[in-house]
Image (cartoon, rainbow, N blue to C red; front, side):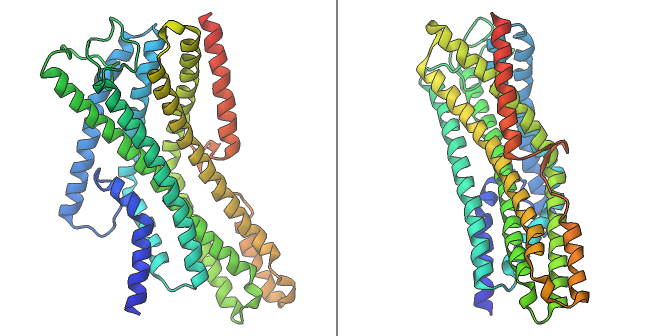
Length: 399
């Protein structure tokens, strides 16, 4: 029995390890059982990261105000300012909701540790493997973007249009920031470069970690819905029908509560990401078309970085919408599983009890952005179309 429990705990540890490695350094990993000292140290790490991002936002916003009227410089500034701002917002929200999220982690741990059939275990492992694959892909994309953003300035390659408004002759990761001192002199340049690198790392780490934590939660919920669907479909085969049905209703209620916590935690983050993606996609589309039209300013390295940046944020946005679509599909399958159950072979009293599940599953469950826009692939498609329309408007305005 102990060997079985150890194996099940190892499964849980394997399922969450990538997320834990990302969120623990910034103090955001949700754990319910912590000492006062551990909570204090987590809060200190979160505060340090939050403060670092606020400090880098000040010169970024200052430059944005000074660059008013220069569309190209404003766009290049927003590619840094918006991710830093959204990272700051998401850290604050995630920290505020950490207690509720810790209850979800307890639920996930219980689901992995409790007794289950080999089919149920394999279904959970399959869902967890999908979440891990997406996490690895996102980490690789963000890591590649981070390395390129650091190496290009070191090699003297500019990622922005350097004008008189940019107060540095040497290249920095965040070129379109305004400082009150001369960043081209030593040691100001080296210190500024290091501070910007740290800020970029603290932007990438929580952003990607919080993204992948959503994948972890949703795919675990999908695994539990798979198990519940299988149980409801074959409900008529159980001898203790009433007990199993009661267990199904309790599990379904527990899953719905978990989805409600996920929605409550992430809806504002998703709204911020939706607006961020729409702005960046429209402005970057305008910038890329403008660069192609002006061949004198065409830089292969700069174009490659911009395309990689657009692909990265598009991948994140698409992943959010795909995850939301998968969740909707899984919830709908519970409704159809109740219909597919051979309830007509049951006693009328037992068959009537299925009505509770049918009523509860009748309304679709969505992850939303700001409780307004459902996170589905249809939303992603409409967002792309709308952003492309704004690119056309910007190009028309310029001409």
